[in-house]
Length: 625
Image 1 (cartoon, rainbow, N blue to C red):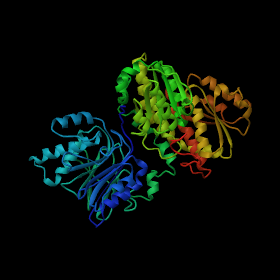
Image 2 (image 1 turned 30 degrees about the vertical axis):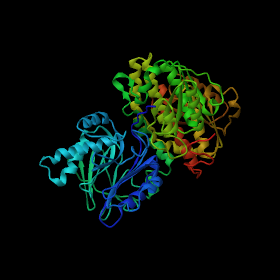
Image 3 (image 1 turned 90 degrees about the horizontal axis):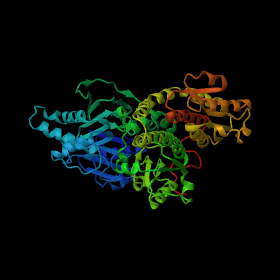
Image 4 (image 1 turned 45 degrees about the horizontal axis):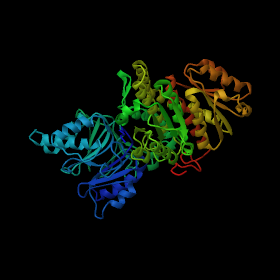
């Protein structure tokens, strides 16, 4: 197995104080508020007592912390695994050779390999698989240089070493750093990953978000990209990476801890839908060579030669991941020229599938633990097929048991209703299509077109999300409706089923997906004035066909809500309501088109007063049959 993973969401918390509080207790209690950000390993460090790390979340860490573990300052971390599986040795905080510099990190150091090679040549010894450890050693290296008579005052050496190290790093980070030589001092830095400072009386805090800070103080400062903050119990100073001093006034937050976890949103589902642009960016990060029209998937490099020989792919998944697989089938067949079948994991395991060494079984699972999908992987391995995974959870069973794969990069998805994981799965499938397509007959021009448009998706998603009030109005308009039909064709045929699934999950109303071309084969019998149809009718190769299908619905007096391409005036004359989305490539249109359906399901259920994040009878991960 060989997976390589960029950015995930982790939880960072750091404390320094001079008021008699035990830093260890403060940090462990604070980590509980951050558990929604990651839960596969945890760690804590104080200069007085050292470090304790463990797989698992806060409860496991609390069990392992010995009696008498204490401190006046320290840093702690909850990990959603990135480089390296969720083991004790890969857990944060990470240290340098001497155990003097300690780093908790959220993000990805993209040039960690070259930095690691350079530092190893200078005698640094690495003990983990994590990219984060490189930063600790890099700071150690600069400390050594500065101590050799650079003319820098002793009190400034730690700060200068951190600034020098961060200026060498490429990628994204939110960091909290501590140095045993100055135990009261903490340094935080941000580049693309949130960091907030908490300002108290004789105490200061660093965190990934305000949730662990709010029980101590509501006075906070949010760092911007390129900021580096130096904190002691009585002071805080903010610099730019250039060492330029920054003056930024603190603000008072009127949030509680739960609101902070949700980023101020009412529910995790809405927060996770709103994270769509970031999710796409994270899935793409470091994986697109736009000027060559190539996808760089490090997790597939170990099986690249085997993939060249593959003659057939079987995608196996359940639920929302299954609909992602159906979209992937269209992508892979059209652009990579590989025959693809998509199977429900719950059915695949009871068949006698014909598999051989020229078949790849591709498992898609958010949790990496879905029982039926895992059984399909094992069946594939038993029959000699190459097994691949598109998985969100590092170190999960499917990730461990497949031969190779691609991680989603979506971060923890707290709401049972899957939204952002689907977007990352679709994006990963587009990257896989580029990877396999360029191995075969996909031209560089087509590759460049896909790469360019993939990079444009976050901006287009921002636009859709900015219009979400229009979806909210639609949800109110149809609030009393008990039945819905969702229709689409080609790439958006699976998205019609996904839209129906979201509405069913959230609000318990009857909703069903239908291939638009199948309306006359029975489905039109249900259509009347109180049975609306949600039609995916963006401008693509089947636009006229879907337009005609909408006319069939309107002829039976059925209301129509259309998801259409910006500038389409004709659809507005036909449909009762229209939500517009930006134009994109047909193969990528599901990534944009599904978001209004997710928002519609959210607002429809919220207005009914339902528990949107925890629908009745459902669990986040289905680990039994």
